[in-house]
Image (cartoon, rainbow, N blue to C red; front, side, top):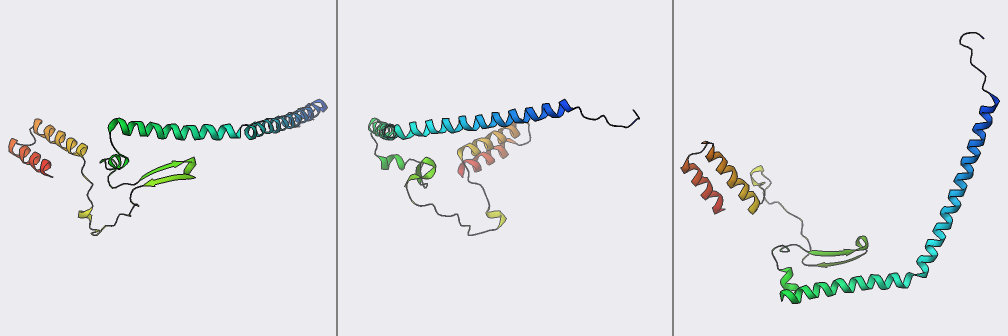
Length: 163
């Protein structure tokens, strides 16, 4: 045999490959038949138990409604009083089921934000109690490192708390 000459494939290699491909095709057909069988059983069971599924769903909805009603009675608040809570102030509340197929919106419709003054100075973030606390702790750190005098610290703190 000369250098660089390729060996001829053995006849058994080609036969083995063909047998493996035939087994793979047979296995895939069996998996397809099994999948069809399972899906038929599932959908037959689903249709057979459809009334129970709907009753269970209705029970969950009624039970959750009764739970909310019990909480309202315990706190002695009406739904309107609960929705006036600062957590919900100015925002509509949307209850959505089944990916938005069934939804209930309580509150005013959302209005888009409109900027009257588009200058960069007008773009400030709304200040929250958490941001004030962070700013106060930053000021205290500057004072402790002697980067601010007592008077500067007091003026900055007074300015921050007056906002």
